[in-house]
Image (cartoon, rainbow, N blue to C red; front, side):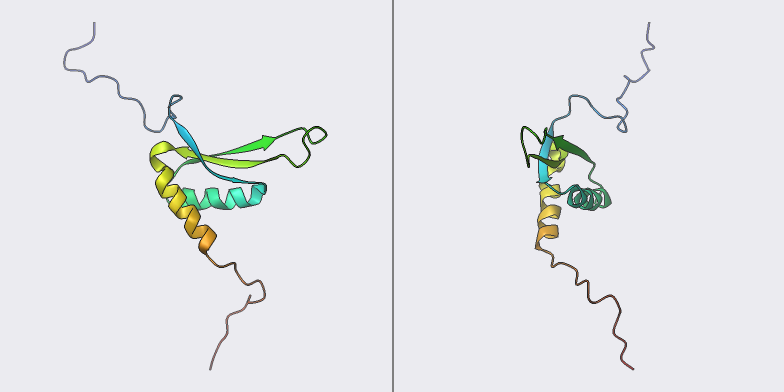
Length: 102
């Protein structure tokens, strides 16, 4: 019989909840782009799940890609971060050195 003063067992917040609702917030054909976006979300403290969508290329050529899923309560913040990423100008590969004026 449990002790009356013992608090009820609380779920461990570090363990995933199998019933937790996840929403798709990003998809791309390029896995590398999905990894970059996942890194942005991770650095903002938003956990995400990266899933590859593979289709048999002989049956569905060109179908496939990668999606990112986040918890429903994190979706709005994740979408904001992704929109900022999309609006940022690309890095100029030609400007690898800093200009020094002296």
